Image (cartoon, rainbow, N blue to C red; front, side):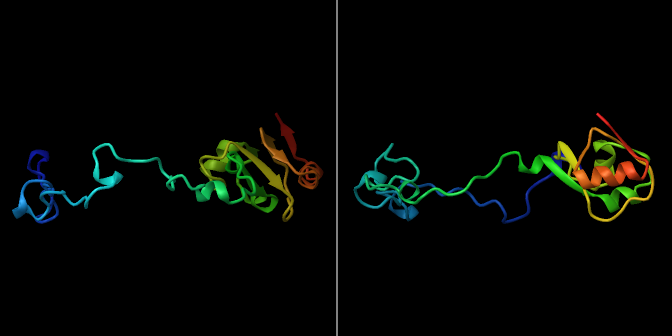
Amino acid sequence: MELNNLKPAAGSNKPCRRVGRGIGSGLGKTAGRGHKGQKSRTGGFHKVGFEGGQMPIQRRLPKRGFVSLTAGDTAEVLLSVIDKLPIDQIDILVLKQAGLISARAKTAKIVMTGTISRAVTLQGLTATKAARAAIEAAGGSFQD
């Protein structure tokens, strides 16, 4: 197989429909646009959501809630998972490589779920008050 011999599968590429090319094409005269009206004219379009001057539905309905654009930037990591990692120096890169947090996470926060029984050094990570106390009680430390 060579790049110059590649072709689409037989029947997968249909020829495009030629509109407005006579009665025999099946789409002659009005070219499938129907008779009269704004949509039949060239350049006849209106903006998305336009309802002929009636107040559009997206403006009639009440707006509710808030969607944070940065919500996915902070990942949560359980204390028990930190305990199982074989590494003593833990930072965000280690957590990403271990597959514990998503690649798009910018920060990570340790939450108090489970226990920790060994001393670990956490670099550039934050923790809840209880998780921080548990890590420091086990001999661990935080570095910024």
